[in-house]
Image 1 (spheres, rainbow, N blue to C red):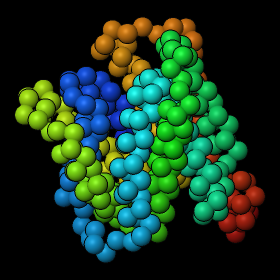
Image 2: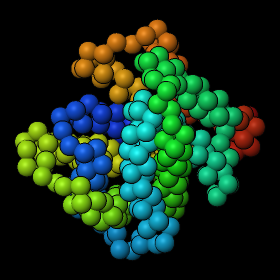
Image 3: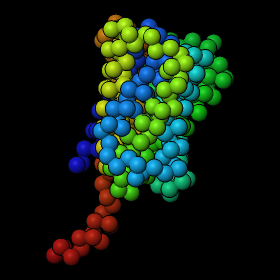
Image 4: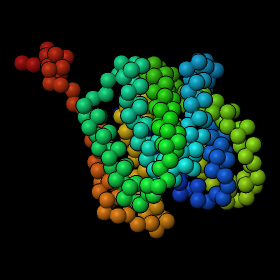
Length: 294
């Protein structure tokens, strides 16, 4: 399958619908995040086979990182606001992913990745700033939580990609990561109170967040990682804020300023630049297929 980047973008599109879906639920955001991981983790674990054979310290640590990412993300947006917290957490993810892949596994990102990722992050920033985020709410602790969230995301993405590229079944890897995260987040859900799940709107919203934006999205993301470098996948995942912005425009009747529109265009162009496969150098082609010449 050569559609790895498309699978990653499809996952990002699903992630981008999460904010709008969350408007169906009137509950503590931390409780919603816990329910999302519990439902999604159980679903991914049910789809997986051979999970016990994959149990390793790095994957167990990555499962904890999945749960910790959610907590850091909601801690960030409660201090900085949704706009700033989201762009810092999501925008820093590709940078940390590229660096971790380089430092830990020697996978140096390409120059095109670096340029496209820089442009994509600039597009995210323009998209959010153009929306009128309040600078006064940029608490230092919130920014630090968001950066920690981006690092945690990068860690579990790089860890999962390494196991998948080594031959592990992507569904099993995601099942282990999110099944483990579900175990971690179940006490959080019970502590924050799951009573809101008894309401039809809350239950429907939680099921969509768990099954759609988590289970299906990470199923696709895992499949995409098999054919997509992890640094590239992290940059393609920046489609998430673009989708969220478009849904806000179409569904929630929000408006986009000219700066936001420019950021959206820049972000889209950057994602296309990353998604298009790079050509192999002609020298390499000549070396491999030289016997066919003449």
